[in-house]
Image (spheres, rainbow, N blue to C red):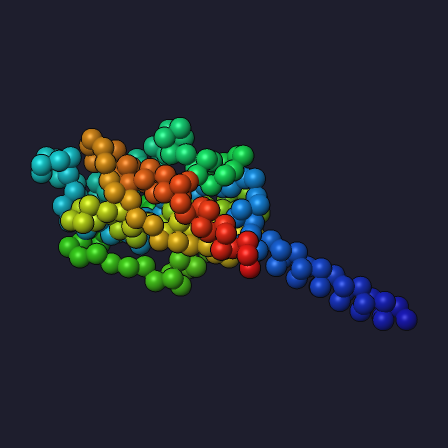
Length: 218
């Protein structure tokens, strides 16, 4: 009898664990959660297409410049100026917890000799799953958000970015959508940061509602 009760208890515990795990990984949490953890801009598979400089060929940037100066600079700027990079408003959250250390470490492993190219490239969907699995955070559960940069294309004047939500505990991708932003601003840092602002604005005006309507109907 004891063994039977124990078996029933363990079976019930397993069913509950599966239920709560499935609930935690429900894409609807993107729209029901009041908090999101911002992991930053992930450039680990990004390509910089064309010649990058301060304008008119002044102070051209090398791959090392992109890795050591501009990539950290773009991530830091979002933290420094939340009033201009309106993550909370765009994604309808009460709170944003900024935790970019993990992505920062990954960005620091970029090969500076391989990030600047002539032709654009694409990131495969399964690569995004693998990228997210590498993230760590002091937050052990909840909703994570990262912008995975596919390319900054100087020739096309376009930033290509995967807006990616994931469940922090399971590292399961809940939603990833490729958006494009047009760069605008003075100086290379602000110019490409302007493309991120544009993407956030598009999410606020159009994309968030579209994603919500599609997801909540399932």
